[in-house]
Amino acid sequence: MARVVVDVMLKPEILDPQGQAVQRALPRLGFEGIADVRQGKRFELEVEGPVDDAALARIREIAETFLANTVIEDFTVRIEADQAADAALAAQAES
Image (cartoon, rainbow, N blue to C red; front, side, top):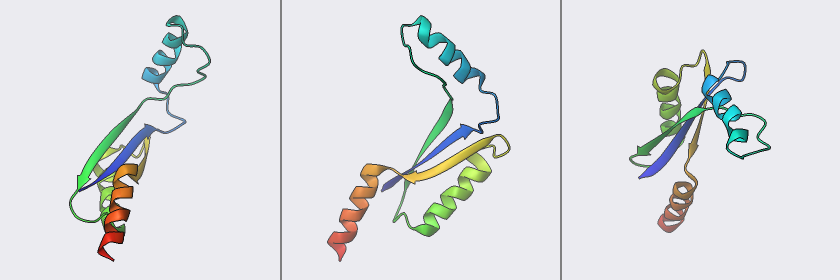
């Protein structure tokens, strides 16, 4: 099984109160030099079968209709790095 990750973040023009609270707390905790913090969500989907263009299109549709509020959030879809390497090795072995 392959793992596909969907990262959901507020659009840059949308205020992020949770990110701002973390950013303000960091210096009080001794962590300096952080200019900005944005809070988001990460979804990990275990996909049965190959992660081809059709599977990625289906996952983008899931993200757009269910995982993200596209009015105020952006999302990215990517194959987990270790899973991508494993898939490439498996494809080579089948050749």
